[in-house]
Image 1 (cartoon, one colour):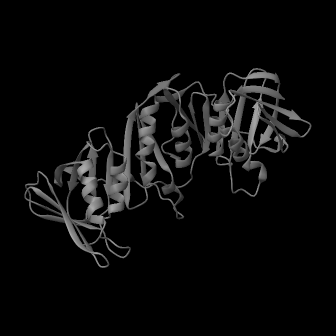
Image 2 (spheres, one colour):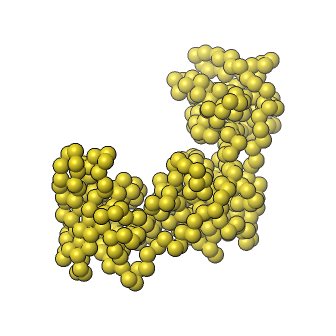
Length: 367
């Protein structure tokens, strides 16, 4: 095997593959990235058996086809310090040789036949959406998944297809994020499971690596496939029962609502939460005529409050909310984003909605 390709493109592809390689796996082969070289194309492939990624390289000159395994972090370190426009990779006996202008590196290469297969995106029928839209959907959902615990379904993002609308929902049981986007069904009607529970890491790999104008998606059986330009990803869907998230949303008709701006609200929450210690219980929100007061009652650092003008004309309402959940939500919004917030009672879920279909529900804390 022997090929030449642009150094910077190879490095970028290697970094994408490294994000999937199983760095802590007891199987040494899964810590490596596989280089597949055909007669006119080459790809980097990585998997941890749950998620697999394939990045096709462009502008390659192939002198001999073949396969080889390479250690991603070591090769990336070498390439970052180089200035070459192109690099050369060649298998010599049982080693992989990397050649640059200022040096040659002979790398130990395991048997590529031992590497598990990673599928490619072959479907002619798929969902298509703009890359910027996909990236926004990912940023607005993955933060709300359960990071640790045994409720595996809550560690995934639930994808549902309603006609030409794709819904993504994430929850850890204490807050819930829901987004939607219009998608195109290319190549005919796309079959979609009732719910596809997608691992957040798989979504984020494509979000960061996407370079094309669109992201293509297809789900079948127990896996989901995503493609954007030269990057295709295969991931095993999470098993388990996702909760009936529609029941969490409060009744808007029986709620009091007010408009808020993301930037000033985030600043007020950060200010007030500065006085909260590890043992303190959230921030107390008090709505009164024309005003929202956000107060902290800290045992260790003291007490304080911040006032914001709001269009509130109903009876006084008090609700205690966890500032971490609020800041997670506000962090993914532009500072000038307008919100509509729905409040029902001190112990009822609080709903925030944006003009572009982003909904966020937070469970209150006891007063």
